[in-house]
Structures are given as structure tokens and as C-alpha cells.
Image (cartoon, rainbow, N blue to C red):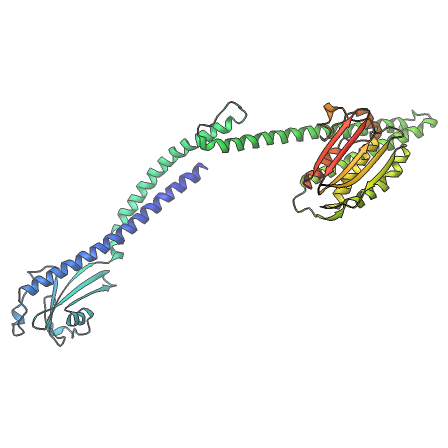
Length: 441
């Protein structure tokens, strides 16, 4: 970051110098051109006022301005364009000047100006012509550097200035960058210090954002560690049981009449292990799901009715009755996930119920809100545990959960599905009375 700031400051300085030099040169060259034209105008008018060229009968061979006016070319042109005199060349060798724009302009308006560029000499020649009282034209001219030659002439100086400025900018930007970043570095090192305040008010939003993100990262890291530890423990328990039963059977240490029981225990732990793995996979999929999840219009009542029909058989084996009430209720969601949500809620209601218990599944529409309600008259949940039942692997009654095949992930999956559908979930429970879970879409 520091290197980027240094390079950008140096680049800005170089561009500023180049832009300043170019702009200044163009402006001053324009002023220079105006000054040259003004000087030529003054020179022409002074020569005119001397009346030196008023008579066409003057002996042109006797005129000699080569030493009187340095760097100023004087040309005297007759009415027909013939050159009568030129202090830089023989008039006889010069062509007719009627085609020169400054001469034509002077004959027409009394005064004429022109600038012609010499590509070979990289110079501009400025011309100024004035009409004399006798009808002839007096023209003065001088050479000046072109804009390109001006740039070329100052290029070494500009290069030297740029190098000096780059050096100065690198030093200053290094110090400035260090000074600017120091408060941020100190601020980052104090993210966990609740008493620390940023030195500048402008950094307060950044500091709060970094502190929040830092806390979220730590919380996520802890959650991953806890999840890994819980997964390891939950997987280890059934695997240990399976390994122990299998080892006893393999060693012939189990009487024949008890082998069936051992096989049933192995099968029960395998089922528990598979259920746990399936729930872990489901949670991982929900964690990775994006906003492109396929949603469709579905009837919540129909999905709930299908779930009740599928789970009623296994519930009857535990002497628990599942009933259904309500009417059609259309929502926008993912059908598979909604079915997963309802199944988990019903399975929980059955798992933590008593023999002869009842589970009521209701689908209602209240105040334009579609509600799914799963109510049971089971063992209930103590108030102290109600806020934590949606955490992964959290169980109120661990012994009962293991006995009934619970993985501790069912309500965590429900919570994820509710969040993905921007829904709301509420839990109302009391020990010995039962539990009511309401999901509002």
C-alpha cells in the first residue's frame, strides 16, 4: 500500500510539472507572438514616418539598411508587386510579391500580417506590411523560434526539474504515508481493546466496521472450532459403540441368544451415524447456498399435509398421533427446503413427546401473514434453554435425544431455512405442557 501511495504521488507530481510547463509555455509563446507583432508594427510605422520610401524615384541602390536594423528584414514593394528593395537579398532576384497574403491585405486594408513556418529551420517568420502614402507597400519581417523548438530547448531543464521533484516527492510521500497509516496501524492493533478510541473522528466509522468484522471473524472461528469438536464427538460415540459390539461378536464373546440384540444395537448406531452425517451435509449445503436459490409458488398446506402423511406411520409406532388443520396458503419459497423444515419440526415434536401424545400441524393466514404452527403436548423446554435450542448440537435432554436418535441439528437446519426465506420463527414452551413452534412467512 505504501509503495502504491508513493508511486501515485510521484506520478501526480510529474504530471503536474509537465502540465504546468506545457501550459505555461503555450501561454507565454502566445504572449511572445503578440509582442513580436507589436514590435514589427512599431518598426514599420517608424520607417513609414521617416518618409524614406515615399518616392518611387529614389535610387534603391543607395538604400542600405543591412547594418542599421539588425535581425529585421525590410522589403519595399511597388503597386504591381515588384520588389523595389530588400535589405536581405537582391530585389532583382526576388519574385513578384502580389501573391503574398500580407501584401494583398496591405493593399486592400492598409495593413497586413502573416506568419509562415519553416519546417527545415524550425522557425516562424513574422511579417507586417503597411501601405505608404505613394501607394507602395513597406514590409518588415523577423524570425522567431517555433513552439516545438522552444519545447526542445527547455527539455533538459524540464527533465532535471522532474527528476528533482520525483526525488523530493518520494521522500515526502514516504514520510507522509508513514504518518497517515500510523493511526490506522495503531487502530488495528487495538481492535480488541474496548477502551480505545480512534485519534480522528473521520476514522470512527472505519474503526467500528473493522471492530465488528473482527468480532464476527473471531465468532465464526470459534463456531467452526466448536462445530468441529462437536462433530468429532458426535461421530465418535456411535462409531465407538459399533466397534465395541463388532469386536465382541468377532471374538465369540456373546452368547447366541444375545447376538440379535447386539446386531440391533449396531444397526441403531449406524442409523444414528447416517442421520448425523446427512444433517451435517444439509447444514453445509445451507451455509453455502447463495441468493440464486430456486424459489417458486407453493401451497404450504399441501406440503405440510404430505409431511404429515409420511410421518404418521412412524409416529403411530410410538403411540403418538399427528393431526392436520388449516386451509390452502400460498407462499414463495423453495419446496424442498420447506418440506425439510416441516419434517424437522414434526420429528422433533414426535421425538420429545410422551406415549399417547399428540402433535397438531396447522397452516393459517393471519393479517396477510402465512403461518405454519407445529404444536405438541410433550415434555416441553425449560425457559433457560429456549434461546439455545437453535444452536448446533445443543440438546436439552441429551440422554433422551440419543435414545430417540436425535442429532442435535434439526432446529439449526430449521433456523437456516427460515433465514433463507426471510421468515420469522417463534417458540413457546413450558416443561410438562408442550411446545409450540410458529413460522411466519
